[in-house]
Image 1 (cartoon, rainbow, N blue to C red):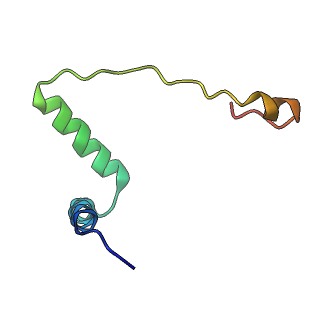
Image 2 (image 1 turned 30 degrees about the horizontal axis):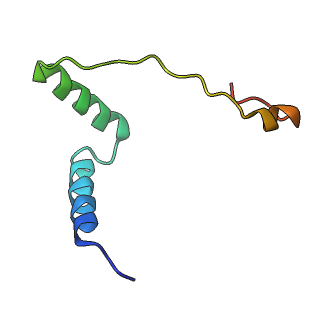
Length: 66
């Protein structure tokens, strides 16, 4: 199977970064939020969007995602 060297390089960097935090997603998130706060930049926050089910699913009586 063909491998893209750019994709492979990105995966290697991503794995090294995650390894610094023992692959703990919460620790990675906290570190990213701390970097944001220390950067002095303003970040945009949008309210979460409600997921609407397609009309076809509602007609079939399938449970809603909400």
